[in-house]
Image 1: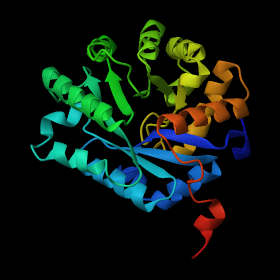
Image 2: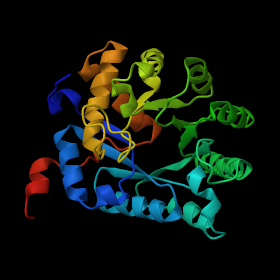
Image 3: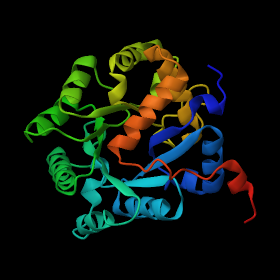
Image 4: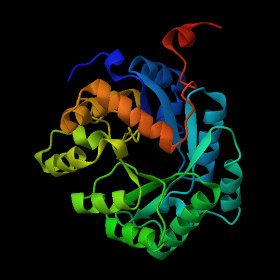
Length: 280
């Protein structure tokens, strides 16, 4: 689908790792290209204390960038005793709107699973206490995530990021109050991903979000290259097609979803291209 930026604006990329060296090396160019693609706001997601601090700094210094802070399950084993207080303190920084990326992961064996569960519970409790949405990573452990969330006995405000589960699991997450976010995988040409597209087609529009997870999960036709927030427009266009709605309607609804969930201010957006091009 070949669409102009005005057909897919204002977009919110709800998950990007802007602190990653592949994006930070040309951050202003990355943001400029995002604006030209119709992106007006970006959530920069932290995975460690260092990356969470960097994400918070980006949110404080770049208009239209906001931050999620937390410890990724694959990095929890390396977290030191001082790391958690630093994450808590970051919530007082301007532009820090969410907690995460947290969750569970059975694909990689970097952190003992019981330790992952302990850290996940710590993030969930903090999100509840501080009234922030939680950004949840889930790889090969949807049943484990569901069991831990159900054990809380309360609705969850947050998002299952880069969703890859089944429709039955999606329904369970939706019933808990979560949003589901889809990344570039829905654009891949693999027939094996038709089941994921079928799930995306069935998610209620008012609970749907779109993201890049850049620099990962680059959408077609740029698969194999470094992903960046500008490419969220490709995923949004494909999701609109999957949902059977116009790109304009899809963007209007999902952007409203993102701004409501993360409590993003409507008027605070990324710099426009002329402002980025200006020497002043």
